[in-house]
Length: 148
Image (cartoon, rainbow, N blue to C red; front, side):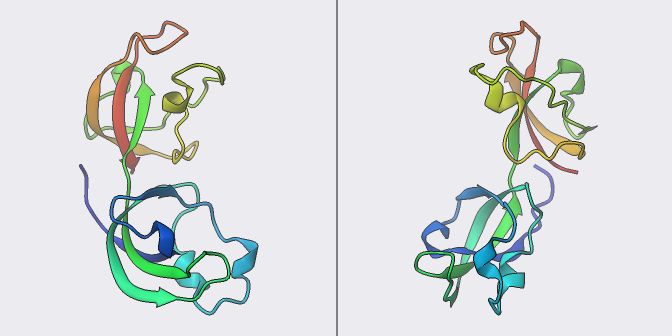
C-alpha cells in the first residue's frame, strides 16, 4: 500500500472501533452550533476512511448516540473493476464510472462507494482477473485503489 498518513477526527462512539470503514458524507444540520464541529468535519466528502486507532477523548454530541469519540483514520483502499491496460501497480488512473447496469451483480465493483468521479487514484494492488464478472462481457481486472 501507499503511505499511511493518519488524520484525527471524531466519529460516533458506537462506530469507534479499529478497522471500521466509512464514507464521509459531510456536515449534517445537527452540527450547526457544536463547539467541536471542525474536528468532526475535517475529512474530504465522498472519500472512504478506515479507523486505525481509537483515542480516549470523548465529546457529547447531538447527532451521534452516546456521543462522539476521537479516532485516527487513514484513507481506505477501494476495490474496483477496471480495464486490464489500466491495472498497473503504482499507476495513476481516473476511474471510468460509465456503467449504468444497476441490476448487474458487479455494479458495486464498477461504481464503488468512495470513488469521487473525475479524481485521480493510484492502483495499489492488482487482485486478479475478473472476466467472468462483467455482464457486458468486458475483460476486467479487480484492483485496489487509493486517492492520488
